[in-house]
Image 1 (cartoon, rainbow, N blue to C red):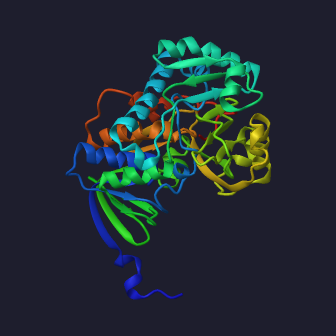
Image 2 (image 1 turned 90 degrees about the horizontal axis):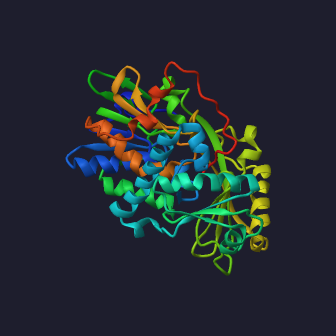
Image 3 (image 1 turned 90 degrees about the vertical axis):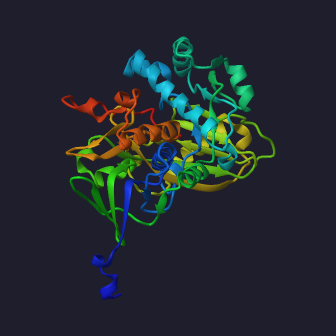
Length: 404
């Protein structure tokens, strides 16, 4: 196919904004929402390479859980008491802000609690060990014995569970779209950013059909961030998650979302009876260290085996759909936020380690503060990229990390 004079790159359309957000997922759309909420007069644009929520934000189970990707006892061991408590509080803020700021009916908000179920006796001990620390941190949690855990879920084989009264679920794709609409930003989908030219002041972002000027840019790109900012390659790597959906069951057995085996598996049942299940990558680690959007027989069989073992009533249900999504994992399991080296007008956030729905809305407010230059006291130090400076790269032993 030939290209006419008028179609050449130098005939690109141009646009100008105060702030451009690159990435139309939960973090990017939350950032645009908070920018508009704080300063309605700001001109804000969103550039998305595909469609809103096309990445991990529209491919997860929609679990809005508090805490990190793992259990609280592990967070204490890894991050220390103060940081673990603040991480819990940050994700609790995310949950509370979603409940109070937005119209929940627009994205099927339900907040009936969540259950972290122990797949082994050792996991049950870790959940119990973290219980008094969680209560000290103000977390509304109750420990359930094996009989009560299994009875509550119509399950078999769990060794106990931690019920969190503030756990919630959403339709994640509808949430992303709702945030984008509420932000009143100019939304440019099918506009992948090919490169950035940094100016003093401001930036120019180039897509195949548009040249976009902005005073500031927020890069909410997950694992693809290093393609635009190579200096961030040490902060994030791609990891694939796989899921499936069953045909509807006649009865609702799973009334709250389930997170088990140190986050290795997660399950929820929709109101129409369908069951969504995912995880299993911890048993296929090398194969899932990829950004390829594909399902594999091995991981899918692992998810099915888990579902049929712990929830025997699902065995007659046919599988209606299988899919995958690429997440961005950080070296230490915490999100990474910073300014583009040498370019303070550029801000990035990445490495949500399969927990973007738990961080995203509150993280958007933090990024909006940074973009406005009105940083408020709070959580930035928890996520600052500077924590990796002058240190060896943290261990990537993430056997228990997975998507939610």
